[in-house]
Image (cartoon, rainbow, N blue to C red):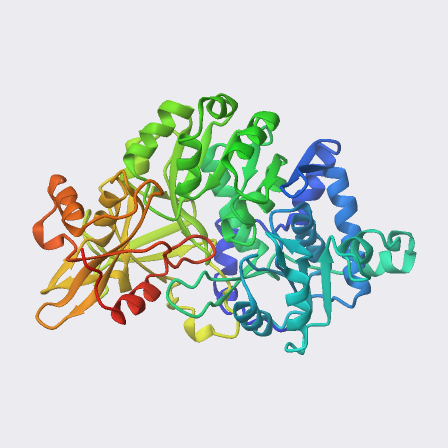
Length: 551
């Protein structure tokens, strides 16, 4: 496939001149790791179904990924072909990516929870040539669905099945083929030339506002984020990283797959989140760092005393995706002794802002951090005029790690001639440069001409002891234009809550009366993206078509 990477050429020389692009790929990082620590354990893959652990030294990562590359080559996969995979956090995922880079193929990770509708759209849009799936995961038959989809997607030539029992098994086709003994095949592989500006990853946005878009990244754009990220956190080859966030999401992919190799560190992959199992893995492997969404940290903080003892090696927990309630930071500090780092980012550029390990704890619940090296931010009003400190406005960024464009949709790239990208988020920046995300442009609720501070109210409601998930969205009103509706999912011990209790709780926090939600919906499930972000466009559609709950 020809990739329309229109956002790369205009900034390449500048990025190289400033040292923000490193002109390296994961193959370079892996070769360096093998040279420095050939026998060091680089990857530990824990599989829940049989409680097994598979270990790879850096030498073995190189050897097995080369075998996988030979297997893909034998199937006709060539440079710039797309290999899609719908795998959990298993070693087969990590080594498949490295193998794709060896050939120059583009890996397209897909979340395991996707089903026919999402997969058909994404596989067609990507023109995928190969689709790698587990035979079963979480009691779902992925192989059967993949075979069903193949007839609908002309480009899809091969289905490869991890733990498969037929001729299309991952093990038979990609590992145990003996092609490493075929001199002609090895020479053909060795003659493939790739560079750091080739598309390395095609990953679909989570779709908080509608149809997903295919985000293209190169090695240069990926490493331009991963290296400053690791430097900000003072991570190095001595660290052990636990990755339980899905590697089919940008968080897991960048910081659980690529970053450990770049650091020459050890990564422990957990395929299904279980707090007790996570604690055991942390203790067994002396994990020092992990990154996940707030619920993961909440689970660890609320775990039993035994689990807390098991977590003593954990130094840093990076949270992203939602504001971190201050009580959670305090609890994690007191019960776990862990430093909580707040961050904000996007699929299009990875982490953009992060607090620092040396910052006061309050920075992690009051801000989303400082921009990383190579990142510029501006807060603008609707006319493009820059806002003053602590004034909310549109957040635009210009980042060395910015994506190469949206596949087949360059008209949606939302990047101006100077390289400024419209994030779609609202934010403010304090006098010291720290950013705070305070909503989405489309999340704005304008009640009687006054903007309601959505993120602030949500953050307050997250402090309610009985509320597990909350989202504030607008609903139409003939007189005021819009009013605010709080959509809430309660914790298991609570079955109902009334609007008055929610209102009284907010009043206790001195929230202005006009900001208090005037409608309450209590639901058992709230629609989210695969990465856990609430899909507010769906919430707005849902509450617009149903009568208000009686509270």
